[in-house]
Length: 161
Image (cartoon, rainbow, N blue to C red; front, side, top):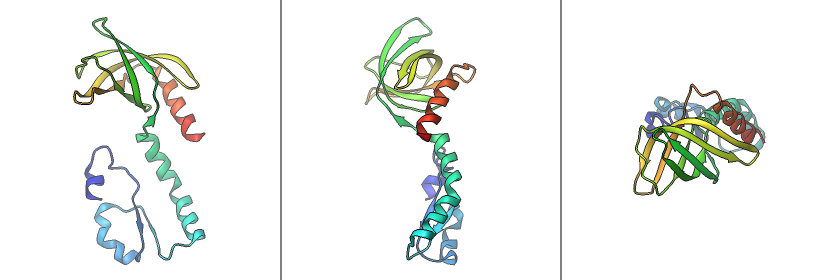
C-alpha cells in the first residue's frame, strides 16, 4: 500500500480493505484506504459499497487507463525521418509502442494511426520514455494539438462500452 500511495503513477488508486472492523483498519489509515468490505462478505453490502465508490474508480480509471490494442503506427519525426511501429497500449494522453528503430527521448514528430472505430488520425507528439532492451518507447500527445481530443473521445467511449 505504501508503494501504491507514494508512486507518481498510482497515488490516486482506489484502495479497498477486506475484513476486520473500522477500528482495526485505522492501523492502515496513513495509506488512505477508501472503503472497507466487512466480513463476512454479503452481496447487498458489497453492492452498496461498490456503488458508493463507483465514481472514484471511474475517475481513477479515466485518468490512468491504458487500453491494450495492437495497430500499425506511422511516425514522421521532426527531422522528416519516417518510423514504423506497433502500438502496445493507448491512453488519452499517449501511447506505448514497439519498433526496431532507434528513437531518442525528447524527439518530436507526428504520429498517425487508426483504432477500431476511429478512422486514421494524425497528432503531434514527443517521445517521453524509451526501453532499448525491449525496443519499446512511449509518446505523449501534444497538449496544444486539438486533434488529440478525438483519441480521448474514443477512449471514453471504449470504457463506457
